[in-house]
Length: 253
Image (cartoon, rainbow, N blue to C red):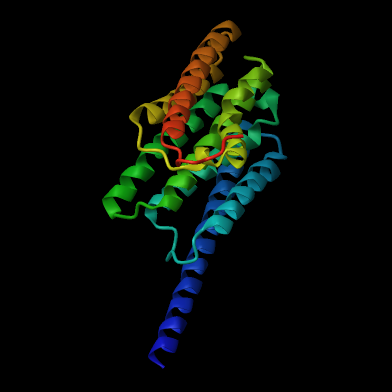
């Protein structure tokens, strides 16, 4: 009876944790709706922004709930901060399909992006302060960063600041994941790297600066080429480390 009771309690805790996760996601959706309405009121945004921003947030929330470990008891404050950042990124992503709106309000988009970037440092601090660091939270943060970079690259293309080649920066992370399917040694965990984190922040900062109207396309191209070079260097360092620490006997394709 005691073991049965323990199993029931564990199942009940998982259901409570799942319910809290849904509540957190719903709160995030409500925030996206409020922000979207404010953008409509303040800047006369396209009516379709409600669907694009909301749809992107729902896609992010669905992915989070799908990947969320059943054993966790609620998202926790650190992941809630990351979810807040996801809501902001959903707004930025939602306006990418409206180039005319971006051109009129590039400063506002850059400011919103800067706020999302600032929150990127806060969620890690909260995780350390509350002792809630987890592999799930780190992955959530990393994948959101990768998506954010893709969004900013698309915004620059929409503004005709740079060519479509800039998507190479945004898609680098996903190309690395695909490569890991064919070369499993690429899937090993990497050690903490200050250089890797610095390059990530540099990518986002560069892309945000290039959104500003006073940055000419020629300068935007130069800045993003530097960012791309640093990204190649960062990935190169990681790939070399993974190669050197691959399991003995691995067959490379």
